Length: 275
Image (tube, rainbow, N blue to C red; front, side, top):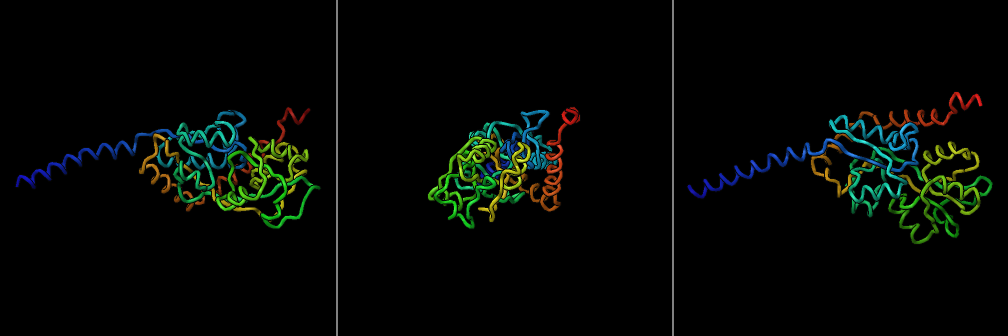
């Protein structure tokens, strides 16, 4: 009787201890901070009206999910893509609003499934300086550019490390300018964001995309291992709401809206048009 009663008492105490832990896990973070690649339209770019904020389809999707979870999710500018990844890795920022899945990132971040977009990574060249291209092998012996710490999927990253000469720069604008000056032979970047940025800078017609893409990868929301908000409850809820958003076609609608927004922002203002 004593033994049974002791076990019952222990069970009751443990149960009482667990109750506040669950409540704490479910409500300890009322605000999350996210960041991402700031040169990534229509997925992400700096807000012209508030450059410390990122806007775009990815940012809108996070805000949608935050509203579903009754959480505030701020999507902020933390510097170039390499710096943004460092901020999340260190836990100073909670989330990356769109990243490809790689082993190094898996070591420091949790990936929220499913992927919400699939993007094509392509070879950009200076129009008039094309070269025969049909596979990864055709990039050998040439010098390419991409962003520091950028990824194009685990398989291509491994191939490039062993076989290609790739230089890293901090911004896509810098990479494209080097390409146009003939200092590199090609740039690796995604099709939509690359075209959007090139058009906004006024040299879109001078660039050409070589097919086929080097890879097509899914974009995921990631949560830093070092985030104070990272717990099983949050990871589960983020995955649940992401799945529901996909089922409702929310990401596709947000992408279409932000394609229009980006194009509108590139038009000259009425004052500029008069000049």
